[in-house]
Length: 236
Length: 210
Image (cartoon, rainbow over all chains, first blue to last red; front, side):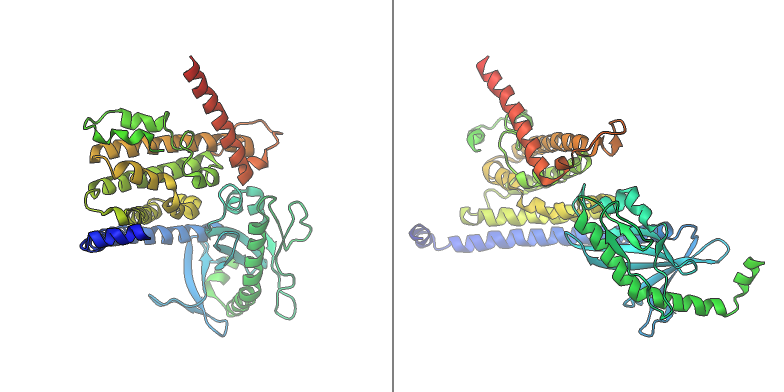
């Protein structure tokens, strides 16, 4: 305390020096960060878009063309105009015969470390989830990130049951169970050592599917009942 | 920690500035600095290597800037200015890694921002770069960076081999090998670090005796 006071007394100009030094370093830092941000932004955005595109092809096997849809308040699908960003986005995937493979839906929720963002593929015809991919996660490397790497866990999403009951709601909500205790088609076989993360995936999918799947199925039925030239051709 | 910095009066730039970080003053095995990333990110060889390289880059850049500004920054605000400089380069690294590869960013994401609080970088800025010429500081940063990466890799390799039965995600043990899950968990980091410190200390004591 007293030492600092003496320094200040002896050098009246030193606080100006300090201020100047911090200001100059602050300006250099700001410039460097802005420069790095601006230089990397286009590439980061392109990589992110590419990653999303790739993820859609992974969660909807057999897809060759995708189409982004927004879901409006009434639960109807609307085509996205240029730069619209609706609250809920899903992607319809079509195979080479222009037949609908399924819908890819983005979902997010709290994981162990941070928010986990995932994409899952829904096949309205068989009423199952047919694919799963992590878009963004900060889970512990070596433990929590097994949700993206371990084949045994990913095999949960080959045909995860999300069928609707007569009331138009999901019959059994998706849930994660302990590793090796999966008994029903709507259960996700968890990972020992990554309990919280694998449970979080169950929660994210469970919450998202209860909300989105009924809307998607409704839309699918509507689209199916209106005669579609292309689908008819394929059936012949 | 500061015993090697008596050379600030010497003008000659020697390779010793580089080599000391590799072994004699290895940041992890001898100075025991920056333990947070050493224990946290050394669970696989790949993560350890990437973390080591990212830290080495931040160390190099901050040493360069601190050394260039060493006569300009008043003593009273030096720590604040070093932290500002380090944080800047960590942010730049964060963007750079995002732009290099989404995959890499995914596996490192959480730990990149933690480089800010790696005391190895702050200690090199305070103990070396702020008292030495640009070239010496660059050599020091390179040596310490490589030494840090090497040490992290030593830990990561052991933990991945025992805990996951693989190295760089390539399985090396025959079927039926029971993975030591504990080695991947935080506790394994302490065990492995202790084992390495033991080995290195034994080697170094023997050297002194002979």
